Image 1 (tube, rainbow, N blue to C red):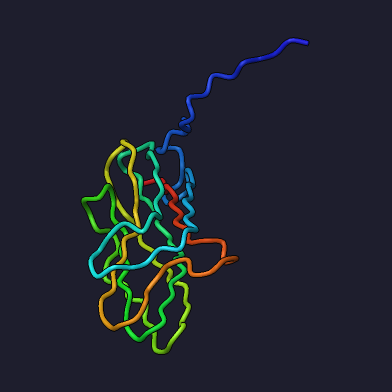
Image 2 (image 1 turned 135 degrees about the vertical axis):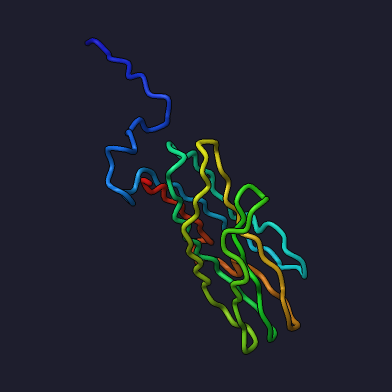
Length: 154
């Protein structure tokens, strides 16, 4: 039986000019399920995803789903950074009004990075006010926190 070897470099070869504007070209997802304590200054949560756009005119739709927990009263600040240099979503606050409060924070935005180089989006967090223990991914069985990015034709 003859085998055929396909030559594919891992990057789609769809000309963005032939795609209608805002068509989804590719989707990438990052999952982080380790319980992590939140500190008083912004730091990387461990939740990240990388994508390499095929066109400089592409936009990137970013969606996060972060499992937050606190056993006090206060707020957790979340933001998404591109390549550790640019905030693309910031100052989203997850509030806890009572002990042992669990919630899921969803952040969304459309970014215009204007590059065909690989981009990494990272979720950062910090305690913004209050007292108690603040964590992401408290307990087990929640499937972890996620970040999904979709390249949209420009």
